[in-house]
Structure formats: C-alpha cells, structure tokens
Length: 133
Image 1 (spheres, rainbow, N blue to C red):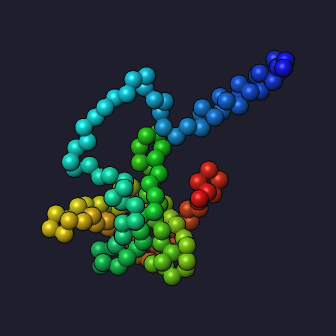
Image 2: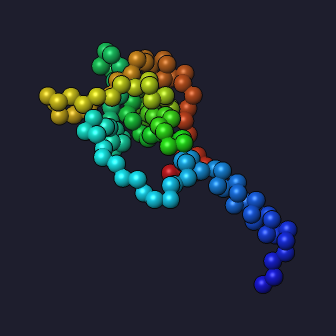
Image 3: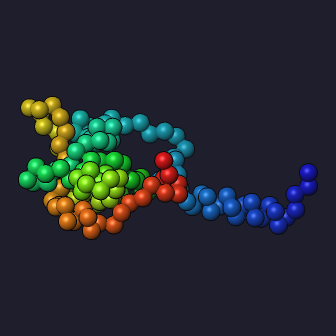
C-alpha cells in the first residue's frame, strides 16, 4: 500500500504529541538498580490507609498516588464515607499528609490537619478520561 507524504507527516505529528504526553522522564539506556532504604515508604502500604486529623477523626482513605515527572505530585483521598455523601475523591499535596510507621503497633498511620468543612469545599478529583476505572 502506498503512503503519501502528508499521511506520513500526520502520523509523525500524532506520535510526537504522544511522546510529549508521557508522565515520567524517558527511560535511560541502561537500567540503574538501587537499594531501597529501610526508611522508605512503599505505595502498597499506603493504598487503603485511613487518614485522620489531630483529634483522631477519620478524614478519608488513601485511594491513589499521583506522579508527575517521576515525582509524587499528589495523594488522592476517598472522603465520601467521612462526609456521608457516597463516593467522592479529593487530591491533596503530599506535604499535607504526615505518614509514619508506629513500631509498637506494627502499622502505618496517616494524618492531616483538616476538618470536614475543608473536605466538603475541596475541589473534587474525578476518575475520568485516561484515569477511568
């Protein structure tokens, strides 16, 4: 099948825009192996973790972790249950949540300085488009 020059150009432009849409830097030519420090937090231990405020009131659960450019850019919380409104999500800056491992309890804890009114007025995060579940 013969492909015209305009079709090749359109295809090349389409692929070029897909490359720009990537969310992490391009992979290096050779793998770089690391040793993970025992103080690191693994995302598998965070998903589903309850988030409480300083008073011990549940604010929500960690639903997801957002990455941009290879860095954590946000933490998605499921807050509908705490608000009594069904399914609702908000995204917060990672610095808004304190996560620590409690040795004596052998479990992870997450806390944030927030109240229910702040959760109600927070912009809603939606699992739409490329994030549709």
